[in-house]
Image (cartoon, rainbow, N blue to C red):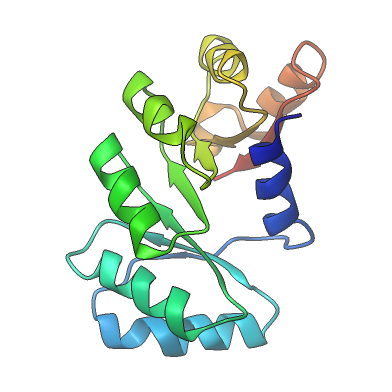
Length: 161
């Protein structure tokens, strides 16, 4: 298992769910992250679906010490770099591209890319990734699909969304 996979697993270990937040008002980010952390949900994902997302990540990373803030809906290398510079502890993408892999290669910030087919999973595995987002989980067969992948791809772990 790669050190980045181990880092990501240790960050998210013991947390049954990861709240996915779409922050429309940056002023809401810190109070929301504090409330979730107090409730035992330290790892949160702030999606880059709003204009305030990067600033929300910056503020949570700087002001909520107990929070483990990740960036979600990362679609390309530019967004990966911006999210990493904003203070993201992990980065989530709905899929995997060579551009994202290249951006993640030299970054200390682990990437959790989405994968749903055996080919996508094997390509991610070939790139050294062993922890993947299974997205969209329900539409892609859910638990039955994950069980089917378990035997031939036993060294890969999934975060279904």
